Length: 375
Image 1: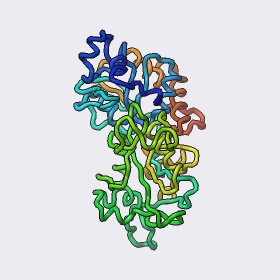
Image 2: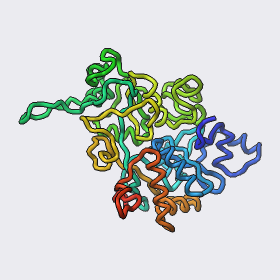
Image 3: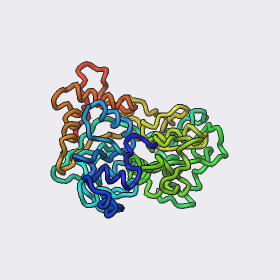
Image 4: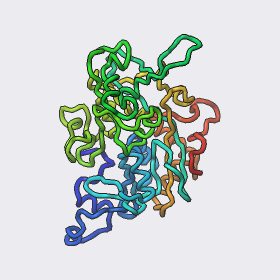
């Protein structure tokens, strides 16, 4: 059984989730057709950031709002379903939101791409795109610039970019320059060993943020993408649909894990692994590398001192909002009771994310993150 948000186990269960009740004859007639409506009287699922999966599942439970189930899968998929972008979101053998708006709220690990009339981007917390490896790995830091004597210009030698995408284009020659631990970081346990690199897929807001931070456009061929599968849980993009070489009995990840959680477990499983993921990837036996000597602590993420810090969002679309969606948004933003917004912030910080202002300071206001790009 995969994680709770993943309700789509077969074409028939998709139909039961997202479409109105039909007879068995009608079911046979519509099998394989796109199912657009996710939320509503008979549907519950909504897409958004995989990084936020644990936090949003917790938040939905805290809110007491019934009729909502968080599916995650990626910020890009959440945005598609806010806007009804074609082609839509492929999930569990069906396509959703293909030219039809399927939801009006999307938890995202990035802001909206452009602003459409009636949309609103809401910052709710901060996160870090962390570089995860095994806790017993001797290396503790990776550099993005090479220190030089005082008075001379610094020379950009970005080891993170070099490992994941070489010169940015993913060319074989440039990727070969940073493909061992000795080339990647000092004091490594295994300098001659090849790096084993894992990443989120291209629907991920974390991948979009990572590309923006590093200047990567195309990843090195050796970098393996972990994707979400409605049946198998997290799997490599090269695994057949419904199967997983990384999740299940005897494998590092559980089928109930989000992709982000799986990346943390992959890092914890092998001293040669480096994976980028949000702070929700925290796993026993994994650690975060510092970047240019700066750790991804709450203070450094909040201040922006950590190089790969970013905001997290609960974005709103301009479609027709269901009562359940409205009730959840009212709860999350404390429309009826400011304590509700504090509870939402607690769900985020309990998952490892960082409140935008220090909750321990007097007069703290929940979700005090400033405005997003879309008012």
